[in-house]
Length: 147
Image (cartoon, rainbow, N blue to C red; front, side, top):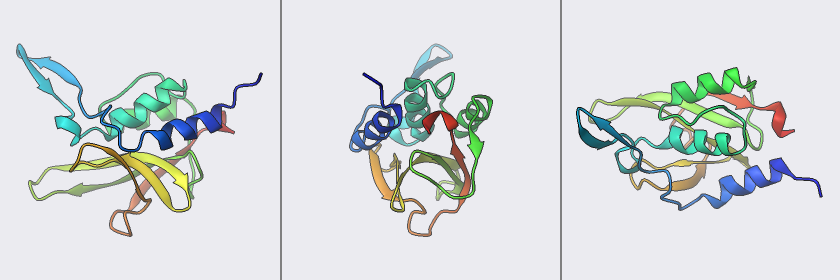
């Protein structure tokens, strides 16, 4: 029996759609409990890094896009020009109505589709990889360990 890591990795990503699993991460700040994912509003890096840790493709789970990207670089992920199935996409930083800004991270699953978290619902969902040309891609990462 030979494990098929890439196929399993893609299946786990696809099967995560609709999940609430990554929407909460609690910390204690000044003695008070706080959900730093804000019930899924900021959970994209937690989702992506958790999947990458599960498959031993990075060292640790992270709560931010920048820390996830740093860990990916240290773990041998390379920046590529065009997405391929299983690659990780980091989208540009955008400013929201409440003046907060953030980058976004998710997985490319092929046929111009990606899977990431939805800040409005807190759920993992499938969407066009450019958000229908509404969000620019900053970086695309690929790992040789998935070949």
